[in-house]
Amino acid sequence: MSHTSPQPGYPAAGAAAAAPPKPAPSPPQAGNLSDSARAAAVIAVCVTAVWLAGHALGAPGPLVLAAALVLSTVCCWALGVLPEPTTTLLFFLCAVLLHVAPPPVVFSGFTSTAWWLMFGGAVTGVALRQTGLAQRLAAIIFRGRVGSYRQVIATVALSAVGLAFLMPSTTGRVLLLMPIVLALADRLGYGPGSNGRIGMVLTVAAASYMPPTTILPANIPNSVLLGAASSLYGVNLSYGSYLLLHFPILGALKTVLLVWLVCRLFPEKGQLAALPPQDLGTPGRQETVLAAILALAVAGFATDALHGISPAWISLAACIVCLLPGVGLVSPRMLAEQVHLTPLIYVAGFLGLGAVVESTGLGTAISKALLQWLPLSPGHNAANVAALGAVGAALGLVTTLPGLPAVLTPLARELAQATGLPLETVLMLQVPVFSTVFFPYQSPPIVIAMQLGGVGLRAGTRLCLALAVPTLLVLMPLDYVWWRLLGYLP
Image (cartoon, rainbow, N blue to C red; front, side):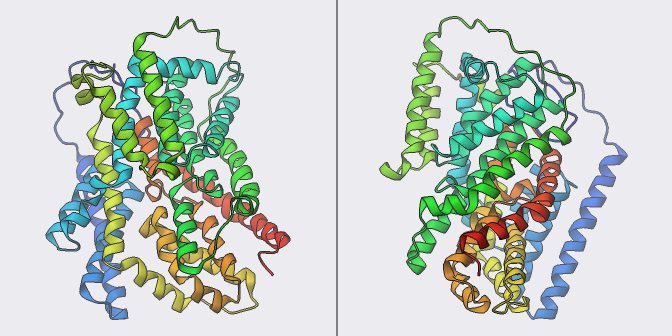
């Protein structure tokens, strides 16, 4: 039976196919008009602000138009004044009609590996639930580890971070863990919209991306940084030194902080009794076949550096095998009813937005303008580090975090000269920036996890902002001291 969540978002990934008849649509409410008015006001403010700034700076018209569209879209996503798919489709339409970028760029999200990773993962997620394999894995992994809600959240977080040492694809880890965690939530009685379910889903989302940014090559931004540093400057970042520099503060301590915040923001009162042994019987043929498919897929994810095949195409191959009539894991009806189109459109939207920012030169223009205004000078290390962090954070709101190293790394030599810091230190300073997420749309894997788990943007934004504040006030100063102890900062 499908459920309606009190959180804004989409149907939970585990919603069953058969749903009761929907009631007749009610007439539009006045609140809908007020929501549209708020959205129009937000867009008007964004367009006006960009036009005034562009006019003052003498920016070319196409760049001003691109900036107005990007800022309006980002603000509508971040503030939730329009439903996510509405904002996304409006972005597509305006970008094409106003010739902000060519259609292949605007719609490039549909051809990206992240989109196909999500599509393949959505299909295999349906197979996991339908065969009962997700419930079996949840019973095995979390056996005896659910004495309290805090313990559940801690186990989920540690599972996500631990898997990052074995599996280099963030989205692949999300696709593997989410059906298992949803099965555990069902078994604990945490239905769609409950604090427990939201907390577990957001823990998977955040712990799969944020702490693993400190592990090479566990996700896209640090892999891009690794490759760009080597190709542009001949700087080879080693696994051990990278881990030592970043993991103790931004990995381990941030995981602890994440668990504490999730339990505070999305509490579940009362002590959980240990789950009784669940007799799921002997695995059937479908479970065995699906386990073999997933084992091969995980092996492919973990060894993509060796064979060169993107995890997206491995995920798609697993999806196709599940759909084959002779295998019979996912029927055409299940594909139509349980693989939801709405989150796929949203993912394509924010991936396309990143491509528009890159193709129009907006990211480069913003970064160069910010560098001219920054008070960088040799000998003022704390101020320089804070200024570089502010630049990265501002760019990350526009380019999204996976694209941030591609924008900042080519500027690293200039930044090193302006600050007097070693080149490797300037390169490494990107990690604290792309490990800090202010809004979910900045990180595609976080959004994918939220959509697969049926958690709305408002809850995700709440956690991201709540986690960003102690990160900036507590973890960043600790990280600065740690860098000085290791000799990365004079």
